[in-house]
Length: 513
Ligand SMILES: [Fe+2]
Image (cartoon, rainbow, N blue to C red; front, side):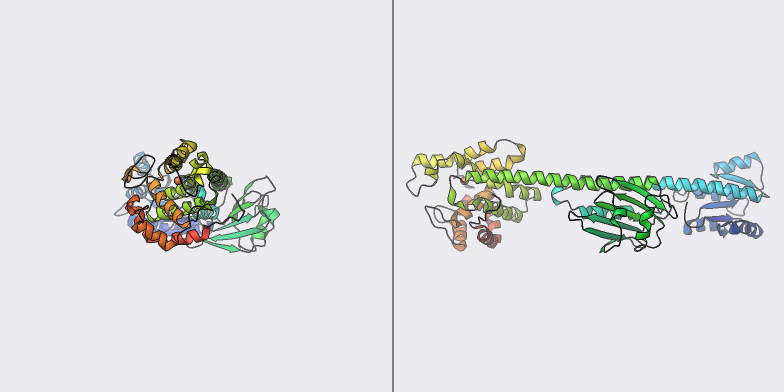
């Protein structure tokens, strides 16, 4: 039931009749609004929250039928019950009244008890209709919210608290139906048993504000026991509610507590307080399903992140294995992955591409597993056959990685990272855009690191010398080997390459792989 007094609009051109209605209604706890004609009645319906209209039929100008028709053709106010008060008892007049949309009729002179009974019945019907509309509105609102968070679900960047913020904003969003809480309190227990309480306040604001607060609330009353779930509600003096014992603690922070709806498990608790009207099991169920969806997504995101982490770990393990025959490369594979990220970002490649190239580029030399360490570590005197065998690491690599769709980028990189933009590379002599973009990016990243890195058969160059060789050439390496756009990107951010090399140069700290 609404918490404001039911407001009844009485419309009559006779001041005496209005005074009579007022005298009947005011002492019975109704708020009364008066209008002396149809246009005034319509204006008051638009400007005031009217729950029911008592409408005289015979009025000069706009009569009761037309006034009623206008109320019922207005989408916002058509649910306001209209009782026509008429001295006409003719069936034709009653049919006209029904056609104009009136819910009921009272004949003049009216019987007070009858008027009050009909008002009570229609207000009850309106209240139920309002609840139904509010429920429909709530379901639509939360369904749209659920659809939106599932559509935009990004497990890698999923932040639970942000989702809870959005959920609370949805729960608290204002509507004409007034079925939203004024406050929301959230408690989250961490693994050490510490509890963080957050308080959301939507009072008189468009925006819901969240603050981290200290709360003196008994956790045993707020949270469910291990493995249990609590979905309950409380209204006013409802001492039978399972939520009632919690109310005294809540009153230390929110006073008064008019009503509440709660969802709790053993580590998370959401309490929505002071809805505009009484709460029911329906409100608790709606809240519960919305919270459970967010908790499910949190759990799903954690599982996906675990799987992704294991996936990356396996790729890096394979990449490290490929270095077994070629041991003086330090953290070459990690550095190359980082350079690729820098270049891809500078080239405005999509985020998904940048994330993929960071990890998949580490497998570029995996084919070296098949190449003899004697050849790989020769200080000088590579024969033509040795050189052919080294070149085959590209083909070996593509075969090892195989054709899984998730590893397509790694396969293309392994196969194409020694192709040159001018067509002078290997194994296929591809040129220009025949070489996949990830291959063109890796070619420069790999060459920069090869120039910087000391090997058994050469000393490394400093950053400036390496840049000069890449940009101007040294006879063996020439700028035409590289995609001009990739080379330009490198020139724009070469200092970041230097920082990355310094950070990851031979960083073997015993952690991870
Ligand atoms: Fe290679």
